[in-house]
Image (cartoon, rainbow, N blue to C red):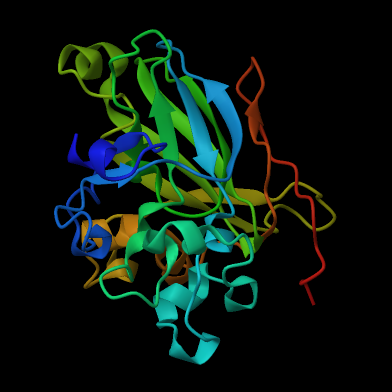
Length: 267
């Protein structure tokens, strides 16, 4: 591809799902907003029931030279940490990671996704799954419903952020027949918890809030904006801020466990 000729050492990755082609993903290097060079700062990974694996892009903000905090947009401030601007120094060798260079401002929006890779097909192109939302993915635990649809649980591994669930709109068989990932199309939810129960009852109550354009709390939002600025959408619907939800797992009987690993910013 033209990407491969331009910069060696990066694997072109296709963007799929509701944010593919979004104005928020377009850059001077990729005016289509559909192809990203590489994945970075990958944390956990897990196998899928259909034989691929997914890997989470976590602390991608460390890689970018950023404007001063006062010059960041509200969306950027929710995702970037200007105090860490350029700490890794990638921008020195690849100007794509310099937000101060014209045409690069959207480049950070192209990271922070779950990436799906087919290890059994070396000719396949890895895909960035925007349907699972953009944030600091620790990993995703992928299971199947009784009807055969994919479900992925994932945590945003930063203080005061959220737990999410994605449910595919097609069965695995239907998606694979259409040459799509079962994680490409579906509904993204964020968790909200409350004390609930009777007095003295230690069991709380939880609900999954859909991050969709027909949710009244997201009036005026577009589908691509929800999936690029997922943290802000979760803010808007009143989700419960958690203490760094990390390696979420699902037990054989279906219980979902989410370790919370840091509470230093809670009041």
